[in-house]
Every structure is written in structure tokens, then in C-alpha cells.
Length: 243
Ligand SMILES: O=C(O)CCC(=O)C(=O)O
Image 1: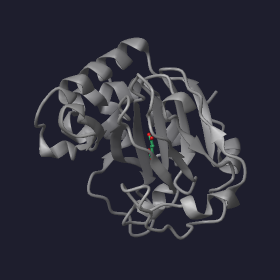
Image 2: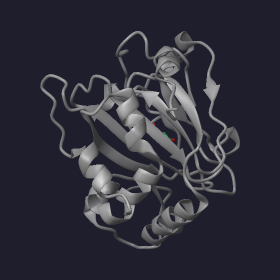
Image 3: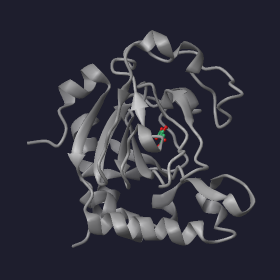
Image 4: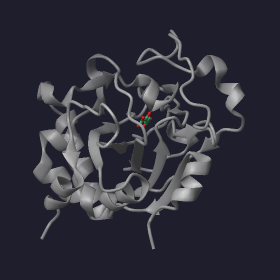
């Protein structure tokens, strides 16, 4: 049986997948990010962003993880079952286009404004979805992660500049129209998937503990005009699995 129920996913725009990432892999990833967080400077290839300033400065976001270190992240993404999820939701032409970490550090972690991923991308990616995995506990107490069931069904909604949410354009001004908000309450190692149009965001982290997550984004390389800066096919990804 597939990890994901494609029909339910298409109707709600998201689905929680339960426990996908082993504690071993999770500790290895956390150590990896701690190592980067402890450095004054890290490779520009990670396109690092920070929350907080001075002594309080902490890593907020890292990008292009798989392309920076395919030997480390390739086997882990395979063990997560991500290639099978991509095959179930997109088909054999699915490719990875993005792989990032959202590290929302304790005390200084800022919110992620409600948005649709597709609205923030320069390219149109029909069929694209994200697989987000909790590396720590995730709940409203630490900034959490939330989304709006069914919000994917009306296509791209106009986003706006929002001084309260500096990282990117936001749907905060119209979020009520999407109805009840679903709070993702995830245990470490649990994953969720969402559609490229699914409206989601997260709060500031005022707690004592980091709230960390890692996201892999898949798109359909067979879509008309498909192009992306980074592309990894399912065959390439599966070739990185441990033998
Ligand atoms: O991890 C978060 O707080 C937000 C994640 C997100 O917006 C995304 O993966 O598109």
C-alpha cells in the first residue's frame, strides 16, 4: 500500500504521513545543521538566512541541501520514502527541484507568512508538491506549522507585501477566506505533504527549543516548458540510496 492516499491528498490539498524519518537519521541531520549553525560563515551554496542578531544570530533557512551534499542527503531522502511518494502523486517524471531546511530557532525564530509555494516561484510547476518532515516536535507552542484545508482548489491567489512578514509576500490580508486553520502537531520524524497551491505558514518561535523542519519539493518534468535551476530525477535520486 502506498504511503500516501492520492485521492485524499487531492481533495484536502495536504496529508499527514505519520512517522517517516528514523531517530538515527534525524540525529544525524540535526548534528549537521548544528555544525553549520556554529560557524561564522558557511558556503554560499546553502544560501543561508539568519534570525536574530549579534550573539543571538541563528540559522533560519538553508537551501539546495541535496545539491550541496548529495552523499549525505541522498540516502536519507530515499529512506524517508520520498521517491515513492513522488511517484504516487506525480508519476515517473517527478523530479526534485528544491531541498531546504526551515530551522526556526528558539526565542528568535520568525514567522513564515501564509503563502502558496507556487506564488513565490518564478516558474509554473503544475503538479508540484512539498514533503515536509519534522526534525523536532512541531506545535503551536514553538511556532508550529499550519495550513488551510481546501485552500489549494482555487488556483494562485494574489499575494501582497506585508511589513509584518519580511521574508516574502503574504496572504495574511485575506487568510480568513480560507476557513478553519489546520495546526500540524507533529512528533519528531513525522512528515506531511502539501500541494503547491496549499496556503500554509508558521508562527514565531518564542519557546526555549528550536522548531526544525526539512522540505523536499517535487515537480513534474513532463510539464510543458518545465525548467528549474536544480533538477534530480527519481532514477538519480534512487541511485543515491544505500545499497
Ligand atoms: O517550516 C516552516 O515554517 C514553513 C515551511 C514552508 O513555508 C515551506 O516549506 O514552504
